[in-house]
Amino acid sequence: MLAVFLLPAFAITGKSQQNNFNCGDIFTDDRDGKTYGTVMIGNQCWFSENLNTGVQVNDLQQTNNQIIEKTCYENQRVNCDQFGGLYTWHQAMNWDASSGDICPAGWKVPSKEEWDALRMYLGYEHAGQKLKATRDHTPSWDGTNESGFTALPAGVGYEGFFGRRGHWSIYWSSTQVDANYAWFAQLDNFWYPASPKYKILFLGDHFVKENGFSIRCIKKD
Image (cartoon, rainbow, N blue to C red; front, side, top):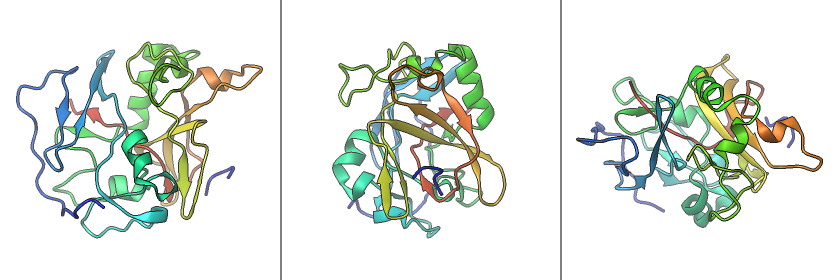
């Protein structure tokens, strides 16, 4: 557990790659028609929005039933519309071999190593500031968004509990530690007096897979 704290159903089908895509274009997910901005950061192409695919289920009661499921913060659909869905690690990763993970065709849930490459490219001490949305963005945060990543303080969930919206953005990686834990990437709010945690992109491995975190997709090589 945390250290602190209806769309029509669609079955998993074969996923197709958008033709003639260049990073920076708007990407359309063929599975549900949703669109996502994209951005090149170093040699990595990222979604510039959180994934928001799947049938809404409350309280992170997501199961491996061959239907993609998401949970909205406080079970309110408007929060998925603004911040994207929250997904357990199992929901994000445990699809059959032909389908891959929860990201569209040609994309994937980034590994711990890919998150680390992102923060090293941006500079370890200030990567967090460069990833977070600005105060004049809607929804707003307190970063500079120099990277164009536009991270949002989406908050997190665990079973029937939700918290830290406006303060935290946590993303799953595809890298698991063991049967219970997986690596994640975390951004925190600016607290006074400013601490190093605000400025960095923190990578950790101490949250269980049942937590509901955001997903950012990265382009496959």
